[in-house]
Image 1 (cartoon, helix red, strand yellow):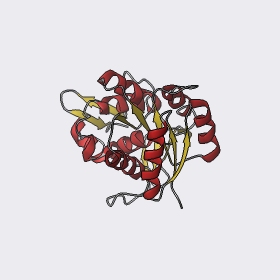
Image 2 (image 1 turned 180 degrees about the horizontal axis):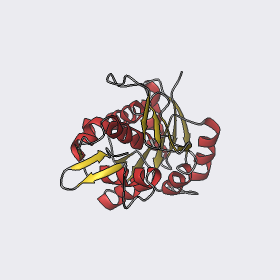
Image 3 (image 1 turned 90 degrees about the vertical axis):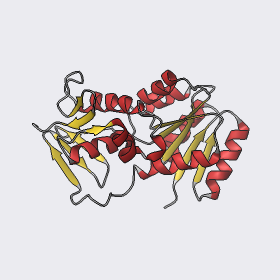
Image 4 (image 1 turned 60 degrees about the vertical axis):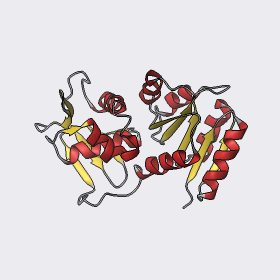
Length: 230
């Protein structure tokens, strides 16, 4: 089945270049130049991935991201001219899976697209059981769905990969670099602190009290682990 990407950017040259490049890689690419039309396109086509500019006429990219994360876990890559770390973290806090700063190379964007899409598909070789049950939480690896107390949680692909990795081996401590490498990919190793934002977002969804987590626990000075006593 053809992979559909919705690309939203108000710069016509970026739209043309990115659409042509992605189309050559056999992706189906739908484009919009403002946030309102882009959101309508997302609702109509239900794409596999969204590439979303931060600054847009109509609705901003951040507002689109915020609205989508209330109802959808479609992976989102944000494009922006904002290079400060605080801006990158803000985008991740609103639910973006990845962040790429303009100007960027098409090859780099393609690598990010393929990496994010990999997080939403297939099983890794060591997965022998499609269901992981940890206390009140059930994780279905095959369908990329998570339930707590029989209520489904909407996790982004990145949040799901992090949860899956930790839950497979309760008590095992992973450093930020290990989580980045195993849950996101080698190309993200320069974004070590971004893992904290994904962890924070995950806790807000899965913990009864995010400030006192029992599932995704911090091991100070080392990294994170999934709680053993659940």
